[in-house]
Image (cartoon, rainbow, N blue to C red; front, top):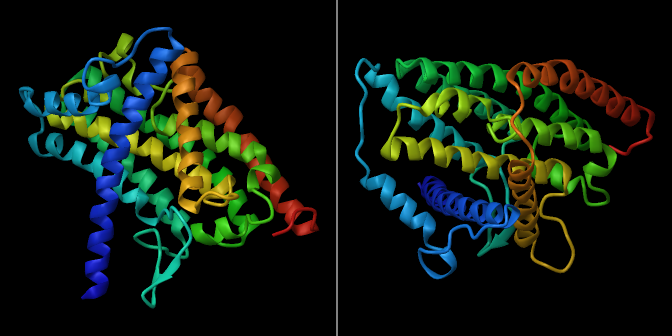
Length: 329
């Protein structure tokens, strides 16, 4: 009973932190985009515009919830729930710091710490596509349907290369447990051993979260808004929240697999983890402010003809170096 209560408390804390993180990342992005584009950004609601996320949330909560004709009602209502649930569930196995002992009990800074945590993450990432696909299909709109189909093809294509890039860290650490992978990087971060693997993972993470320049499923110039064209109010907000939480999640995974997790001098472990995640989120925003959207055929060709072959070659090289003892495992 105490174990179950502990899991419930951890889950509630995680949900609150991720929702707060979503609001913070959204404000962080809008402020940075204003700075990049030489404009003010949010500056009207609250001091320095800090209450803008709250105003946006209230606006969406109070906005009229329009239900289009001919939609598949059950699937239409279920799709945003799937997207938000998978975004929150992915963080369940991500440790934000080392475990410690308190009052004679061992405390882990994650809801669960399975030996195959990375497999769980890949499974959740794969399930996320259902929310977007079902949203497009159930809306009975050609624009939403095309956005859902694009999202499915894009996520499948880039998750293959992402999975291959992740395997390199598993080989180096000899474990699928995320905490063990961080501990194995005490002497050297894995980004030093496999910088190409880190680059491939990050590019795939940008595509996996439908962020510019890979935001073809939501291309406003072609699809109005893509898979969520027919959504409004809080159901639209759920897709929005899922996207930003996914950005935090993939940045956290990159931190654990390649950047030494919470390891760093002087500052507390959790602070180092958050700083590394924030740095990667900054790169997401930087890319949005800098790069134009790709053409869809080039996006798909880049995933299949460039990233996947390069990721396979990189994986073979890492495995060979470990086998020959060039890189310690």
